[in-house]
Length: 251
Image (cartoon, rainbow, N blue to C red):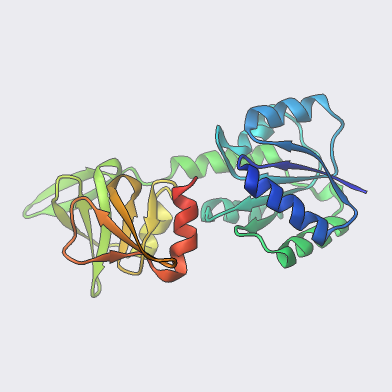
């Protein structure tokens, strides 16, 4: 019997994961569900170690990596994440398995099979991984140096409403309505910005959460956004990104 602890702050997501786990590994038993960093630390400190942790990256009281700063965790960990690419890269470097949400039973089955073959002596240093994540957080871009005529202006990231592309050019629009040209693609900007604060709406727009003033449902898979300042064109969330966008709004 595989004893599993699920650490997930959303009850429906935890229940769905437990159901998928029963399908992927009938010999698995969920012995505990923790919904925060605080409850996870208390449980892991006060109870015999489980065989496997299924751990969401972003919890209501912070990033789950903080758990490893407070308690020694020797068992394998399978992380779940919606779109934290910087974290995924860290996991790859440290040979930790991860699942992208929405999780499918086939992917969970493969992760469980990897767990079965895993030698615990090869487990990575999770405290070191937490430190790596902290470094990634500090590296998010905080300012952009742009040209305003013959002058240079430093625009704080927190003052930016959205980025957009026109043909092969990229621009940022500040909260005051001013727009400036940038020598960066939207793809590159996605790597530089905190994914908690910014979302790639479609191929042309990368918007800050603070810029979204109205969300209108055109259909089940079509969402229209009203941004501030108001762009010249209609802003629709890419159909391929609709589910991810809903999850981003509900974090």
